[in-house]
Image 1 (cartoon, rainbow, N blue to C red):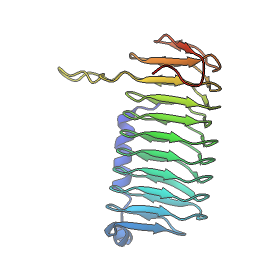
Image 2: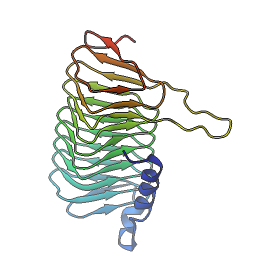
Image 3: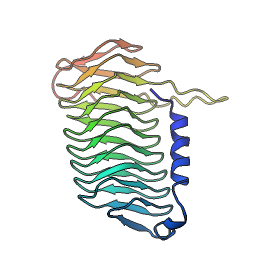
Image 4: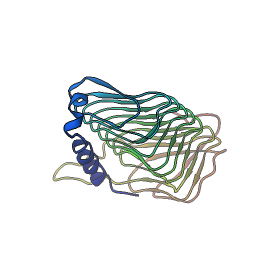
Length: 234
């Protein structure tokens, strides 16, 4: 798994560096629409229309919305949410302060990461690389992740027939001076029908619930609490 701080810095640099002289009109607008070309902005949201192909979408302070069936080379923002429509495809998704949502059947060929935001992957959506957050919940609903899942303070919930290859890791949040930031105990739920291939490693305290109808590999650093039925106890 990649470290989170460098990812955040790369997102900041990439987003800040994506504006050039030809992008000034987009940067000045509060909402811009991408058709056949790349679209970059600073203080504006971006909307990629349905059916468009190979658009690169980047902003600093704004949301990115990709319509159903569109194709995006990359989508990156710093302060904003990213919403990918049903059956859309994208190479990679990165935000710092925002949520990421993948619609049914959407595909991310590489990674999907956020620092401070939730990450929700819908029915039959696929991520070819890693899925990661620092402070944000991760929810899969009958989705596939091929590069593993990583978080620090986020809850994880695998629903339906979700399949994760590459395992799960919950990393330790390092203390700084007198402060210890491990105030939230992540809740990890491997629901009925879900599969995790690879090791589940926990470097800090978590509450781990595993359905008696789930399939998992080795567990390191936590004791699984088995449950029956559709959901674990509250």
